[in-house]
Amino acid sequence: MSARAALTVLGIDPGTASTGYGVVSSRGSELTALCGGVIRTPAREPLERRLGAILDEVDALLDEHAPDAVAVEEIFFGRNVRTAFAVGQARGVVLGAAGRRGIACFAYTPQAVKLSVCGAGGADKQQVQRMVGVLLGLEGPPEPDHAADALAVAICHASQIDGRALGTAPEGVRAAAQNPNV
Amino acid sequence: MSARAALTVLGIDPGTASTGYGVVSSRGSELTALCGGVIRTPAREPLERRLGAILDEVDALLDEHAPDAVAVEEIFFGRNVRTAFAVGQARGVVLGAAGRRGIACFAYTPQAVKLSVCGAGGADKQQVQRMVGVLLGLEGPPEPDHAADALAVAICHASQIDGRALGTAPEGVRAAAQNPNV
Image (tube, rainbow over all chains, first blue to last red):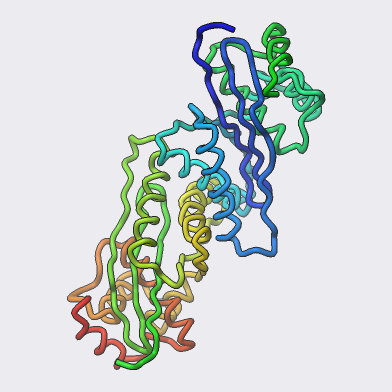
């Protein structure tokens, strides 16, 4: 364990129905998953209740983990205006909650996330999921998808901060695997 | 003044740079503007700080006025995915803040707002602004645009709740004009 300060990153994969989240702590090349999961909101609830529930849960995560940064994946909507608007609403809640605490937010393209986690911008979903599990020393690929995606973007941000690609850092993987917090 | 309970509506015209707001109280056909203005966020600030500032201000409005409902205008983006995403983020913050307090939110098309305020779905921006001023007994049309739009959608919701078009209720206009809160 180095004397270097740990960096805690909250990764978020925003969506009204399912918002994935994952908190990753990095210290040098050591990576640790502090938590991960999905905020699900029922479709029968009014939209404002669903966004309110996301706001509550994100606030709770920010309270509990006091992350140094929030990382979100940049999504490409093509021409789908409805989807862009819907995802925008969920993302706005997340950014607003972080921003009013003065926590900086960062966005990464899917390619940047894949490159950081797998060492290849064209990696497929299963490869990303598997590498997230390996990098964080988990027993298997994290489930469900949205949690894995959130952990992946958190790893990506931690690697940007370190200025290197974590996908090529096996010593970090081993160190994280031994961490009791995983 | 009737014994009928007052209904308080927070109208919002969401946007990252400028979010218009207006609080309207209605009691039967009496309409009163409790406040109106614009939350402006500087473009030089990071997006999350801007959305955080909107969240703070909306929370303060909800605290101060404890509205029964929040009304927002439904916007049509055509094919503009970027704008839809940006407005979605600001609207998400507003809906999330209201939703977690259990305050119901309502959306109205621009046509519904114009019909309610002016009695004609095809009314132009100046007509809407002028009628908002008249209906609320203000000395002139409210400024700036975004505040007027927010007051207009709040009036629209109050009229929906009353089940009638306020644009054709001159007695309501007079009553509101005498209200010292305006």
